[in-house]
Length: 334
Ligand code: UDP
Ligand code: MG
Image (cartoon, rainbow, N blue to C red; front, side, top):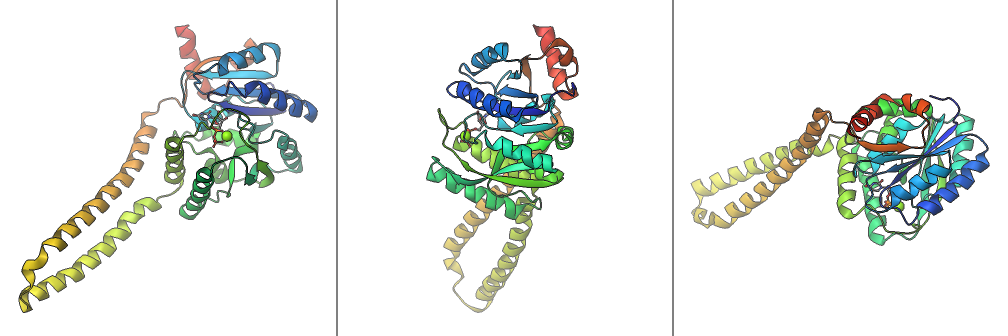
């Protein structure tokens, strides 16, 4: 580590060609005003547009800018993790590329950090310009997650936050593949506080989190931190067995003491459908966990880097271990 850089700002980008210039401008202004050495780490998460070219251009004129270019789209949470592998600063900030999180808030985060907090997360007071659906699902998600997990994941916070080098180092040591970064940061602990802000509208372009990605993200969040969905099987199984046993008594009574037993077809079909449905759902729940165990056991690298820009040769040798393996593989192939 160079030891020179005070702040690292990580910006994950997926098809953000429309915003990158503006985002860079705002971030530069804010970080210049902080008055200490910094680096802007743009992680290009396999964009299909000109995001990488535009960032490369910026990196070629501004020595504070780095580009980590992924070989394909690995996902937002992994892009953030890669940024942390490369970050050299004493404090590391994660911010979205679309300017929904106002860069000016970083200064307030830095103040809190200087007071001694090791994690300063941005807490959204309001979300502007997002659809009702997005707001409602986000609301439901954060409450659900909170009720399901033992980890104290703060409500209404995204990944916009500042973390101390110590927290970053611990986080980098957590090797799990299905990463839910904000949950991991809560789990790690340390002195945490928040800065409140209003979430702005996206500067340009559209959300890179369609419903499908959001569901995947929610499942990662819940399964990474909770076994409760698995317990549902136990509880349901217990109650259904109890109910079945009572119904069995009823049926036996009818068979032995009345003459109404042949009218049973509807109830058999209904019970069959109900139980089959429940069993399939529970198998699905178990499958979600097994799938994730499978992911972890394969031990593939978290991401693959095509190239990095903005690093001097010397500094490049100090790159962290996890990021180095894929880089070496790349150099051979070039
Ligand atoms: N992003 C990414 N990889 C992805 C999806 C999103 O790096 O696969 C980035 C995106 O470029 C943005 C941030 O993650 O900087 C948050 O995405 P977005 O603003 O689209 O999500 P929203 O704010 O709508 O939840
Ligand atoms: Mg956004």
